Image (cartoon, rainbow, N blue to C red; front, side, top):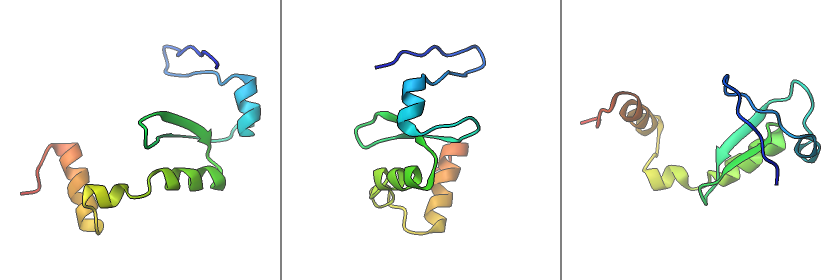
Length: 86
C-alpha cells in the first residue's frame, strides 16, 4: 500500500514501485475508472489497459437502458442539463 499526497493543483506523484508494476514511463497516459465494486482503479492507458476497462464496463449500457446513440445522447443531456428528455 502506498500513500500519496494531492497537490493544490490536483496532482499526485505515483510511487516508483507502482510505476514499475504498471510499466509507466514519463509521458505515458494513465487511465482511471470505477470497477464493478465501486473502487477507483488506476492503470496504464495502453491497449491492454483499455481492454481491462472495457471488460470492467461490460453490461453497463444494458443496465442503463442504452441501446443506440439517441439513448446515449439523452443520458448525456440529463447529466449535463438535468433534463429528463420528456
